[in-house]
Length: 255
Image 1 (cartoon, rainbow, N blue to C red):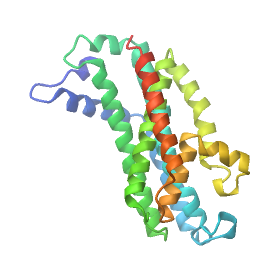
Image 2 (image 1 turned 60 degrees about the vertical axis):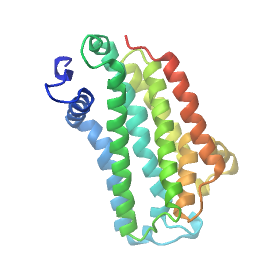
Image 3 (image 1 turned 90 degrees about the vertical axis):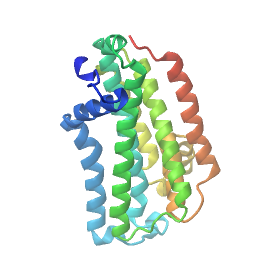
C-alpha cells in the first residue's frame, strides 16, 4: 500500500496521491453504490413518476421531487465526508500507513488533502448531476445561483469538519464506521429524509434549523424558491465548519 503512494518520477506527488486514492476508492463497490447510485436512483424515480413532479398542498405548494431534492443533495456530502472519509483515515492510522508515509516524499497531511478533494469533488459532481436530472423533470433552476453555490460550499466544509472530528476520535476503522452511523441517521432525519421539513412539528423544525444538514436543506430550498438563503442557515453551516475544523486540528492523530 505505502509503496503505491510514492509518486512516480516526473509526476507531482500530490497529483499522484490523488490518482492512487481515487483508484482505491473506485475499487470499493459498496462506497460507490451508496454514494452515487442510491441518491441518483431516487431522483430518477421521483422524476419518472408524474404525481411526484406536480405541486402538492401537502408540501407547501412544491412537488415531492422539489421537496426531496435538497435532502438528497445533502445526503451526498454526508455519506462521503462523514461516513467514508473517517473510516479510511482511521483505518490508515490503525495500520500504520500514516506513520510510514512520514518516511516518503508524501507527508501524511497531503493524504488528508487528497481524501478531502476526492470525496468532496465526487459529491459536487453527483449533486450537479441530480440537479440536472431534476431540472429536466420540471424543477426550476435555483433562482439564487450564487447563494446555491455558497450553500453547497458551506455544507461541504461543515461535513468535512465533522468527518475529520470523527476520524480524530475513532481509534480504528470499525470505531469510525460505528461513529459514522451514530451521526448519519440523526443528521439525515433532521434534513427531512423521512419527514419533510415543511411537515415537521415546530419543535422538530427548530432543531432541524440548528443541525448542519437541516440548515443546508433550508438554504438550498430557499435558492430553489428564488430567495437568497437565510442568513441564520448560512451562519449555522459556517459555525459547524469552523468549530469542527478547530477541534479536528487539535485532536487529529497521525499515529
